[in-house]
Length: 624
Image 1 (cartoon, rainbow, N blue to C red):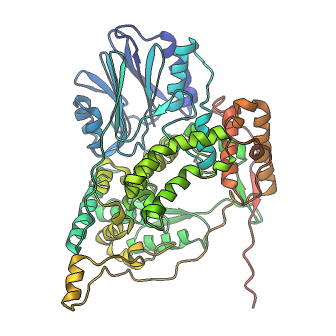
Image 2: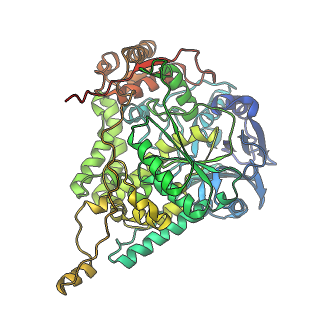
Image 3: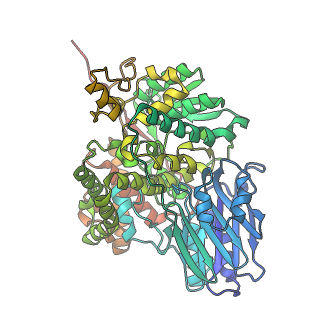
């Protein structure tokens, strides 16, 4: 992982306050969640001392470009990866950094500094985020929100170790959904730069510009046009993984029974890149069964990681919720709920890894699970997204949620499918996935081809409702690995095989001429897909786990009162809780925020608390 912090004085030629630089170097132990002994630091400062770029990394020497690259009179630091590492020289010299970034292959953000100027830019998905803040004396831009906040607070307080100030209204989104549906952060005064955006500070003035996304073309109306779209996306995906052909170790692909990780398996197979696959779950789960069939069809090695059980096999062993939450908060900076499974921090492993996260970009974003594409139904979906669990909020919390929703509701009235498409990029990838990805980057080398700038640009240029039909990714899988056509997918069948559609002009002509209509053939059914959702211990906790979480929420509320959850959550939902299974996800979100407000970022070491056993339900009897 690489962490960057760019600083610029509000008055040109005036040196940056020394306390800000000292606080940043002190804060890195809290803001960079890796073993301190693995971190190396580098930095640059202008001749006048009014701009600086500080960088840290725990990646092994020789992995990727240097932590700080220089050229064209500037220095630059990268987070994520470039499809072509040589592009860093072009980005250093680019006049318009934002436009250059979104037209460069890879999944990354870039921080750049020169005499009297600093700036940064996000890609089309902001999977590698950029955060910013300003005070009376300095502008602060960085890749870790907590680091940006603490540097800005140092400028305000003249303290090397300032206290954190929370943005309590912004936390309503965390409570409702477990991630941010806005450009806010938990830290007052710190915002997240939008997708495809550039921030530039020059002569003490901050300017933010956003590159417009490509306009989608009309849906293909012939088999030839559809094939051209498939070929276009296939070419972009192959270009995104081309650098992996020289990888020293096989790519490790997390494979499930679904669509997206299967597409990655087919992509690596077609590109001739060595890879192995692994699935986590019980032997009879759909993911395990179908992932094994996909791996077998492609002739690659597959392994299964089974959840840890008690000696007798009757209980699932899980971390204490306080330990799980501590890890989530340090890795993801309070921008994702402990409901999610966030891996712990270990020594960095440069082996490339992949998973299907983000594949919905190729299937219309939030359209991919929108059952009814009617404009009224889409508007209801947007309302529900921003209004979900709003009943747990105070009036102030609900008003904040409404204010955040308003621009998207307006956009939805103009273009419903486009709104759901870009909502997914802005928040599900740009906030949820970005926070989760940060936890991976600290110890791994995740390579997500679905989020590559050129792949996303290609997808966005295609009609979102046609992408929603899944004909696009089904066609690409078939082109890359025809043998996977016979392997069923987990859950519902391919959408284009089940949803009625209007005939194309060519099909209407065939009907008039009484010729047979050649529709896209449905894939062979293959073996039946195991039915039923797997048991989820997070939604069906043990009484002990449930009691610990409820007690933690109530304890935090008692300690903080109006300076905590009570600012956005109705008190009855804080002290009363919910019945098990009713809204356990919300309870996880409340618990996460409670721990953050009372004890987050105090110590990188997790509390020493024992693991818990959650009883595993017995399968129902099938007696005759």
